[in-house]
Image (tube, rainbow, N blue to C red):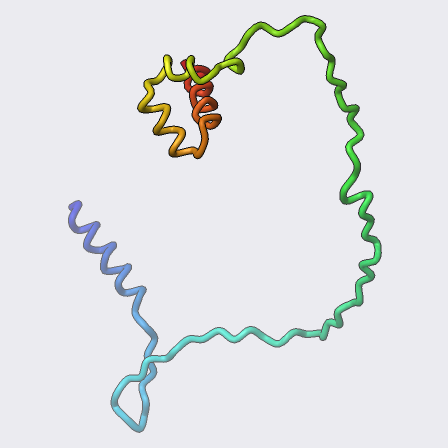
Amino acid sequence: MRYNIITITMLILLAGCDQPTVNNKDNTKAQVVEQTYLPSPPKKKIKLKEIDDTNFNAAYMYPEDTKKKETVKTSTQTPIATADTMNKEECIAMITQEKFDKYAAMFGSEDASIKRCKMIKATR
């Protein structure tokens, strides 16, 4: 029963996909008709309007910032010693002399090596 329903459904689908043919009276051979859709021409011709585009305003498109800028308040307290005060000896103590020389050669100066040490210290 189940296979009969599937078989009938397949036959119906395949029968519906057949291309239309026209028998030619001169030849006994059937010709396939190509169906092409050509849209109908427009009923009325449309003329494009001229548009006035002089309404551009730079002040509207790129407005100035109306937010008040926050003023930077300076604190009267002295900052606690941070990693900014690292020197060459501390850097060599943290990483070895070989790595310090390697970073100096790689980045071009000892100051760059010290900056690298500060970054390493900050991430620890």
